[in-house]
View (cartoon, rainbow, N blue to C red):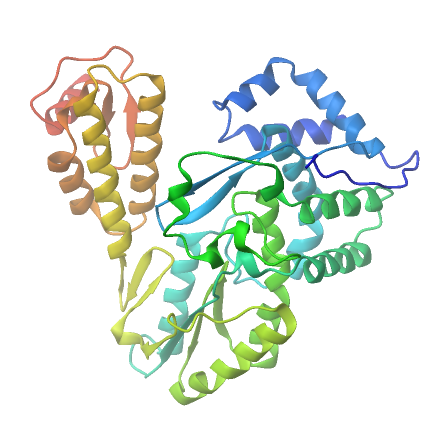
Length: 419
């Protein structure tokens, strides 16, 4: 099937400033600069952006094929990696539309928002529990719920109507229709019809159908991996956030994508909200609560939330995160044992994987854990090419590979001496 095209009636005033495309490109390349598509795009950057500008303004823009694969961590899921030029377009749309979307969102929606994220969300929920329990002297309860197969059950027509209604009401630029048409192009594109599968088809064998776009009903589902999917999901769920806050009157509420928490002093009241929440999700958004992920407990029991485990006076790293970090180290050890001299790709993979986990763990009281895993768990062969800082929070490349040291601690002491 040919790439999805959009048709639109263009007028002379509907132009995209080249500066906006450059801004979108620089935002896009932050974490994707070393990919083949990104490097090819950068070789003729100005020509590529000018051509993209002309295609967008004339209505000739066509979405390229995506690469689809399955990952196991932090949970098993299907990822669609868009072509780099399409990612630039995603960033262009979001940098334009987010100015309209952001004021409409509740404060305690944490995913894909500037200055927020998982650690912000964990700290907010921790604060909710402290306030609701009056510093742990009054009873309060935590209700945590999850939506079943969230991205695959998003109704595109409902979503587009929400985007168009909000953008039309709050944005008066001459390029309004251009961005709405472009948004429709991306939203109603079917990436499964033009996807390149990476890996074995057997990788999908144990993936639940409600987690795959290939099994989604017609008119439903957004590809995980696109920036637009993440931001549009916030638009989709915004009415739900307002329902919880204003109609149900829950002061202490926070949501990260499809994972949300309500904190209240009355356990029975929270329990009574479950069917009302389920009804709203089904009626308004065509979504279902996950029946096996309903958690309602006293705050003292602790609650696992987006990578952390929140207990009175202390937040721990979740068992799943610790287990995934251990497995990542084991994977890197296996790699270095099977190759004499790791190449650039292997080194970049090591640096990305290790620093991602360390960056996550440093937000918790986990120094002993990081020290233990790196000092005793990681193969010493990696310390020929990388050095660790004294806080066990970041690996850095060594310009000239060293001889194998006795231990990571020896390298740390050597670095301290050099300073």
